[in-house]
Structure formats: structure tokens, C-alpha cells
Length: 121
Image 1 (cartoon, helix red, strand yellow):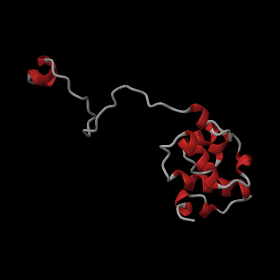
Image 2: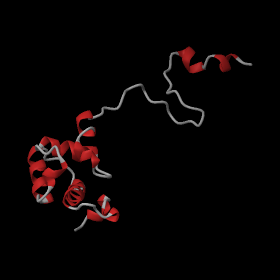
Image 3: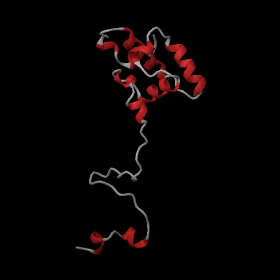
Image 4: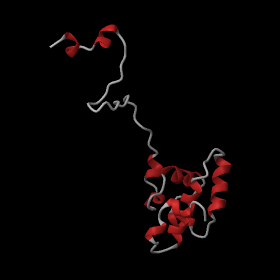
């Protein structure tokens, strides 16, 4: 057994190294990922495959329940979100369309509950 097996040379020299697991994947730096608890616990998240960021956007414009999506246009909702957050990406429009479909159809068809179906409608 060598001295290097007990204490890494970098530690002796004061160099910081990133800790790694046995499979050489880096260990996280201890910072917790921020979680939007209100959006995660909202009724909107009961829609299958709904994105948390879209849920947050809907809460920000005043929509907190699934039934509030009924009869709404995805484009008009997206415009309201864009007014608050101009940097909102276009992919969220598909999630809005999917959410409106879920709200208006009981029971919804399972094959239509994926955002990729609603990309270009």
C-alpha cells in the first residue's frame, strides 16, 4: 500500500478535485435543485406528462384548476404567458394544447396525451 492510496496527492498539494463515484460519474456539489412546490402540487399537474414550467406559467396568468382550461385557445393562453415572460419558448404551446384537450374530453384518448402529438396542429 502506498501513501497515495491513503491520501491523494492533489489533497496534499491543496488542489481541489471533484469527487467521483466508482463509475467515474461526478458527485453533485451539494447544491439542491430548486423546486417549484406550488406548481408541482397544483391541479394542473394531474394532466399526464404536463411540464412543471407550463404549470407555473398557467398559475402566473391565474389558471389554477383544470376546468379553467375548457373553451380556451392555446394560442391566446400562450400570448398571455408571453406578455408576462417574453422569453417563453415555443415548445410550451404543445403542452397548452394537450392540457386543453385533457380538460375538454372525458375520458381523453391515451394516444393524444403526449405533447409531441400537439406540436403542429
